[in-house]
Length: 146
Image 1: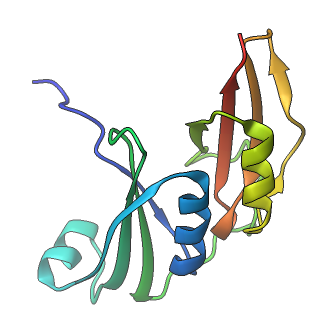
Image 2 (image 1 turned 60 degrees about the vertical axis):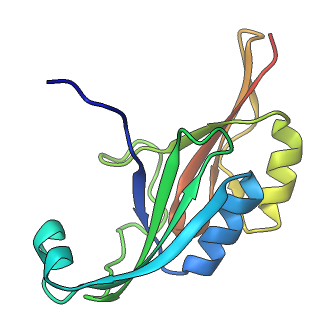
């Protein structure tokens, strides 16, 4: 048996509208929003009393998807520390290939993104950077240059 594909990456956020604005500014397309609750949700996730709003976004090529979730119940808990360093165990980051890294950074800064280091040149093949977006999400950007 083989995997058919990676369907999506799920991220819990505290402000769904802010996260949607950030990722649509990046270039993702909103597929839709839905409220999720009921026995199937509780059974799937392993929590009782789920009341959650989700938004599904896709990359322009249609192959990558991001599911953003905001829990109304049970209340989401904060990660500690709030903005963990890059080397913490668990979800590492989400990386996107972009056409113009400088323009993308400038646009995302208007949505609260903070550059974690600097834009680096990797062997004259890629320009790379990490930024922190909404809910502390680390987003990596890569612009092919060579």
